[in-house]
Image (cartoon, rainbow, N blue to C red; front, side, top):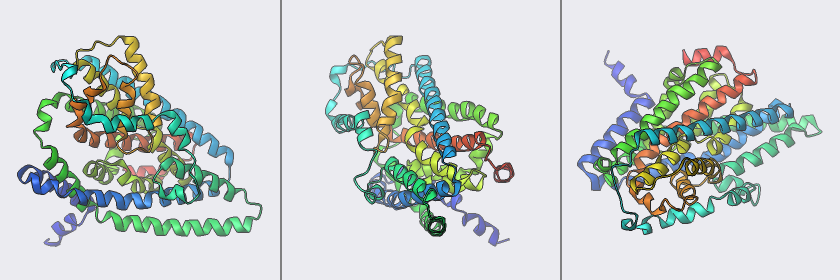
Length: 420
């Protein structure tokens, strides 16, 4: 009997949950000390990002080389991008509808001239770098090696796909087999490295959560509580209802998938970064019956193109700012915002703080809405980033299983065992 609690505490999800709660408490009762713990969270996220590029590269290369059928690769990519486009549209429209119904900013009555635009100057500057032109220019790395060092997932994806195709079509099959075996062995070592790094997850979650609460304080939520609560409720609605219906049509339960991915969701919540759980998500989806080739293509692509949480945030926050500044947007202007948000969310793929940066790029399309209004949500943006990351994470998990089902490659027995 004495060993039972120890076994329970030895589980990583429990440790992460305890770390999050402890971080919140320290942030409340010792805010100055808590704010100084930021390096713990940053260091853990940096450790994970260190292995993301090689994990994605090896997973995609082995998946494509093992697939051999290049026609199937093109079909998987096309289906994934089509799915991302449709679900991004659902997320943007849902945010727009909820903002018009709830009107979270209507009671603030802020005079645009009273806002300090200087606080968001850095974000506006970054927004200009997040244009579609910058996006397309950043697709191709300067060298093969730089794709592994610059931290741009899209560049890693493109190089890995090209390398995988080359490996699958090399004339000498013996060379291809030897290299494929080498990459498979390297993948096993990399995922072992990921498992070692994940043991530090409680420390990272503790530092990140303590910093957030200590720096901004729970009191920061008081003035903008309706916006934060509306965003969380809308994201939950999207995951449970919209993704739930998609999951049911694909033959699995969204609630069971959430339970299966609980350890990774806790990690995402604690670090405010969906990237921190990317390697673990790829492992979990493969264990749940999705083929390695499809996982290797859909998950990294989704991290740039399937940002459901960010899409909800952009339309909801844009209308909140307009309402708070007493700017009445016509349905035509709202439709224009929606269309630009659809593009800008893709244009800023791979940019740190993409949600806030793309919001600046989106607002610029409607001059009547002051970009300086972003200062209204600057204080609580950190609290909403957790929800953005969680929603993005779940959206990519569902997308991978759905595309695997469309391809007829989803292992039903493995899925039932994983979610059962």
